[in-house]
Amino acid sequence: MTLLAIDGPAGAGKTTLASQLEAEYSAHSTVRVIHMDDLYNGWENALGQYLTDTLHMISSAHLAGVDCTIRLFNWYSMKFDREEIVSPTDYLIIEGVGAAQAIVREAGAITYWLDIDADTGLQRVLARDGAHLEKQMRQWQIDQAIHFATDQTRENCEFKLTS
Image (cartoon, rainbow, N blue to C red):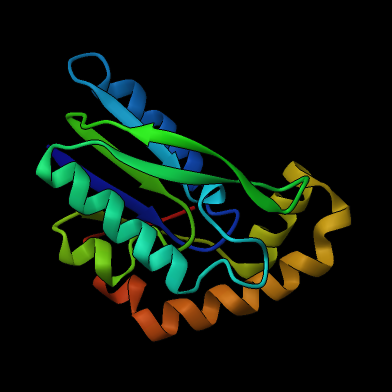
């Protein structure tokens, strides 16, 4: 069972890479992609201890070959409102800001870092998700930068790609 984590700033293309890997691997193996957007606890608490604990649970269960249950965040109601079982697969891909943090690296994940200029990343996100999120996204850029610096995510990822 292989664990992959794709990390980097918002707008860098993490979801696109995860989709490409999923398509490639699913031709010969079982694959599951978990999107970090489903795991964040809203804007303010997204990159906190709850996320780290959830990633630890997911990676531990995957490597042990057992099911785990995750709570999924609803961005419209701004709360966790459903659960989903994550069953073991040949490849588990976790993608999004915070996916390759230390707890996942320590579990032996193959880690990818996608670089992007902050302004380009912001413009990509606003084009994709809507200009109404500009205030939240500007704060998110600050929050993710703090997280990446503290965790030393980029420095510790095995593969570094530039968008």
